[in-house]
Image 1 (cartoon, helix red, strand yellow):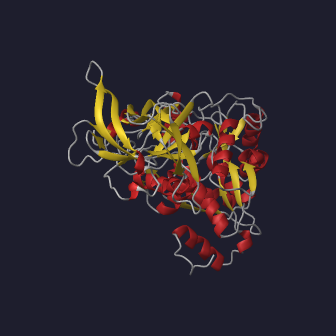
Image 2 (image 1 turned 180 degrees about the horizontal axis):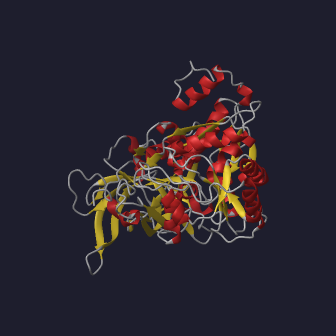
Image 3 (image 1 turned 45 degrees about the horizontal axis):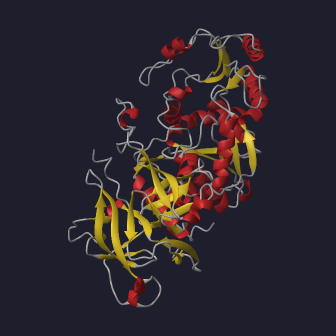
Amino acid sequence: MSTEEKSLNFIEQIIEEDLKNGLSKDKLRFRFPPEPNGYLHLGHASAICLNFGLGIDYDAPVNLRFDDTNPSKEEQEFVDSIKKDVEWLGFSWDKECYASDYFQQLYDWAVELIKNDKAYVDSISAEEMAILKGTPTQKGTDSPYRNRSVEENLDLFERMKKGEFEKGAHVLRAKISMGATNMLMRDPIIYRIMHAHHHRTGNDWCIYPMYDWAHGESDYLEQVSHSFCTLEFLPHRELYDWFLNQIYDETKVRPKQREFARRNLSHTVVSKRKLAQLVEEKHVSGWDDPRMSTISGMRRRGITSTAIRNFAKTIGIAKRDNLIDVSLLDFCIREDLNKVAPRVMAVLNPVKLVITNYPEGQEEWLEAENNPEDEVMTYRQLPFSRELYIEREDFQEEAHKKFFRLTLGTEVRLKNAYFIKGESVVKDAEGNITEIHCTYDVDTKSGSGTEASQRKVKGTIHWVSVKHAVEAEVRLYDRLFTTENPDGNKDVDFKEFINPNSLEVITGYVEPSLQTAKELDHFQFQRLGYFCVDNDSSAEKLVFNKTVGLRDTWAKVSSR
């Protein structure tokens, strides 16, 4: 990649500097290292785009590595979902790796640490350990077991491995310094006892490495050149390097950890722990609920992988945490769907419209364009008849001057069809309009080139033929949280800000061409927004999710 072709972000500058300082380009290797303890979210999507994007830019391999060191929270379901998400975003990995592949090597290295008097088995309780660790302004105190002999430590560690002790009885700690300024360097835990079934290694192990021990050593084993992670790992870098120092062979590539800022999204949470709470407490229907910030939820909502990649590219890489307005994501979604989504007719709040001078029993098929953005225009056939559904909001019996849709005595165009003129209404006993009666002008057929091109009307409305309409369940989604930053107030539970009106389920009517629509097919419901077919949909019951509106008009939640 030429530095003259584009301005480099600070991550790319780090790589370029390393190349200038002698790192061979063929030694570049990146990785995306998720923990398989939940579904990936939008923050992960940015990290995926970063690491795999670097692989593309530098023609370098990228590993997908699962840091599966905590069997109590990890499942094969999460592994499968992560692989699906990465592939759906448009990326492929060079090697599929697991920290569990290295459990024996990590154990062997830990034994070497003990032999070199750089690790010891500690037998104090977690509560005692926390007290002895001290504070950021007060040095810690050595554990009474810190000076156990090498022989005793080796014996205890092997017995921990064999499963002779209960959880919490012992841990293995690195012997660094209880007076270190960085609290993470105060004899951190390397191994803990866990009698838990691992999704890959089964019951082979009774002890499991801590993330800090496994992560950097896994990078080293895979010969990853650059380990990019988010800013909360900045204090961990010193420990990352200390662990590497114990095993590093100068003939091999030494991984370099560097940090970038999280890019949080407004009206959203991007914490696996908090997303798991939403699922477990049934505030949402599951990890793939379209209101969730998970990649699977966004996919189900109809957000495209192109939109997410464009969003990640637009927000870029930063050194400081930042809150990105969700409207920027919406813009990227609209920009992509505008290019790819066919235009179709749907009515979501229907009222019947009867064209009184249209022959009873007659129907005709009108030509409608699919997407004006297509390079080669294609068309479909729409059925038209005497009785139609239109949006209730598209008619006012007595309208103000700026209302440009249907009223009594005025004309509008029916999209792809004729001019109609409002004549009268039928109401029920409560005064609600149940039918609108109008007349049509047969000479104003859309595309006929006759009187339609001579006369002008101020409005065009969409419609669906009652006889041919297909009933559909439509799910209208709003922001999941009522405040811009639900994580912003640490004294208030983020769930207090859940929007009680984040989902509205209605019954609407769509044109018959949608009868054969498949899961995740995208459409623009004309004048209403972008929608996609939900995975609950079937031949017996069409279900659509609203992806995003045609413009950013959302304000009702934030103004409450």
